[in-house]
Length: 87
Image (cartoon, rainbow, N blue to C red; front, side, top):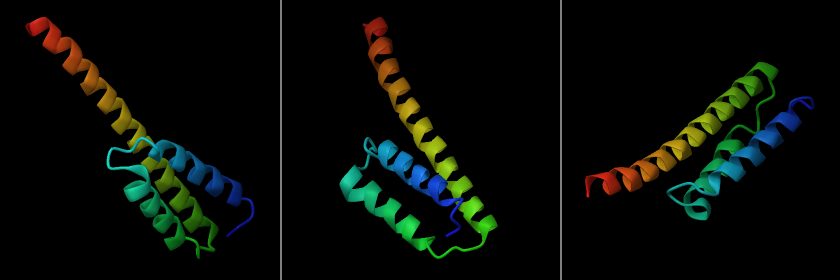
């Protein structure tokens, strides 16, 4: 791996680990093994452009996970307030 991109990859991994702690299907049984497998699959990349593409894909996944969490919070709040008004 290219040394200038290594800190970005490590930061991305840490961010994904942090986001995965509340993943709906489970952290230790589902999210963490898949995250590790995805990073291990890409560990042999040497071309800087390929590494940047993989980082961009990882950042996209981070945004999708954040959107999933926001949607879950929105649905929970909606359930609480809509049920209160209907009764």
